[in-house]
Length: 420
Ligand code: DOR
Ligand code: ZN
Image (cartoon, rainbow, N blue to C red; front, side, top):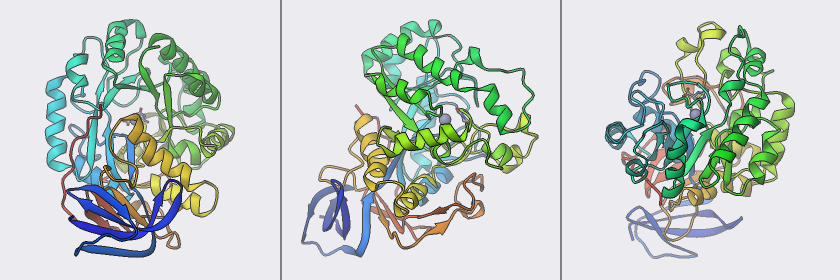
């Protein structure tokens, strides 16, 4: 046994004072007392599974002035995230084996967290070849950062049925391009929402449900209140919600920092999403970490790019809501750790033998405040600036202490996860 970590461990909905035996990066035993010379005792602090963020844009390769796998992964660790799934809208886009291998090489040499890579769906892609190497496929039904828009599902009929056969998750950016209002001159978050209204999302969800009944569909960043019943009535569908759609809306005075797709919507949408999340209806939370530089965001509203960072603040914001008793810890751990592990079929997200030793140590008495300039993401700002949160005191990835009190400690490199 390499080491033992002791503390108040979260297991099956409750805390028990236990010892976690770790060998070769894996949890091998969880018991009251384990014999081992090397140990770390966290006393009455809480030990939780680290989070998996199933939706990040680490911008590498091609846009590394915004983020890269090194900076993004260190930001992830700061926020208690030890595994990320990176989206394909990089330059070049992750749509071929060659481009996938290029990104894979970069991530293996730079990432400090484990990572999975999504392949972008386009007509003519090598579905079977890519399926063996990716965590899932990503389909963009509306234009946003990058050039991966598939405007008509008719053009990818064969790709959809082959994705269904290979059994990988098909993650969908569900906005209907044909219902977007592109003529509008956008001056603020209200205008941005008007250009991508709620029907845009519900229509896209209906279309993909019809077109891909045999795929394991996953709807990314659900944001409209009318989408909630749609995603939960569908048997072959899972759904994620993002912290910005749970906590921010179009009335937040943050200008283009809040410009994101799908857009921040009304207070009623936010409240409906929050309620559904609180009731445990969503499968996962995903940050949709999509950093742009402050300089790029400072362009006039119409031309400012869409997206905001979030991988570093997602778990800390949710832990704060638990502390304030607005959310049950069980809901947070289920959506940020357990369900992502189950859906993507990777041994992460639980403190049990056989699982990766990816853990966070949390002191619920030690809160702080989000300050963009103190974050480790390269872009250095946050739309959640000023909000209370709880950063983990310590973060372990593969049994190695990687972050302690906000400072990087280990140098373990991340491994690729592919799932089954
Ligand atoms: O706002 C967004 N930004 N939505 C997306 O779908 C893409 C993302 C990005 O990559 O910037
Ligand atoms: Zn995204």
